[in-house]
Image 1 (tube, rainbow, N blue to C red):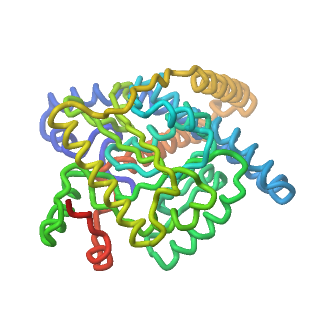
Image 2 (image 1 turned 45 degrees about the vertical axis):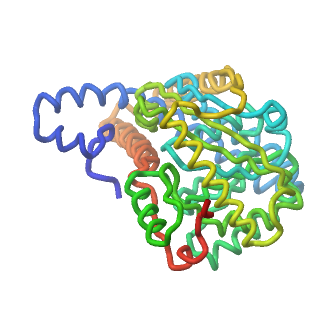
Length: 404
């Protein structure tokens, strides 16, 4: 169900919008640029997505039964033609600046090896930041993720993302099956896992702090308590063919608004800091309890890093790498825009779409659907709408931060 509110206004601003005429005019003026951007961008993204999905369907039906390896290689290229549109949004439309801190040896390995990626879930666009770094590393089309089933998209399904139902009896089977499928993956892949299970908000932090305080555990200040079942399963199943874990920490400067999809559509820039530490999979303990404890240790360290950054402004002791701003995403968006624009230009006169009221109504309905789809995308990315933090009885006995 779509929330009954303006596309481009957060709920607290909507109250102001309804109660104060001057504020209503000002906020409406702020919303216009976003709407003007959302409609054409949405048309290109949706239509190009349908084209990409069609290509993936054909490839899945014809090529996969013959050669799974060939199918995966082709799907990597095809999927990138869609995902690069989102990279363009970050790089060229909004000018988001991603500062990547990582040692030179790890930087050289990125995109050349399989890796399990774990990260704190700090902002609404963490996944886009991950895609951007994957694109710079040459593995955007083989960047996978373990995510909630309700986030499913056809391009992600064809690209072999993992979709979970948050019921361990089913999810354990899904994970094991997915890991087995990845054993013969022909290209370097990244598999992202947000072990906190949901995006960070102050309300969720308070729940985590209350739980930690009630059990005499270290009280987190900048991260949520990690839920380690999925991580333990990932390491146990993949350590034989995945050589590394990339421990990522995302931070957003306190003196700027947090980056969101809505701000990106408005063309508003932000700075996102990302530190990556590489851990050899062989360094991890062999037992399930040991693996889970290792993950908890990592998040204690991550919390301390963020605390130091917010207190002193010093983020990382790793080397700041220059990741540039390649023109590839810009070229792809220009190609899609020209192709779809030409198709619409030819289709409208041929179909006499705008020569009747039915045709005009159909066109208007399509544009409204575009706005609704983009609205759903924006709203689903908001931290306030993410999954509530639920510490189950199982979590209370097993999901404990290491005491230091």
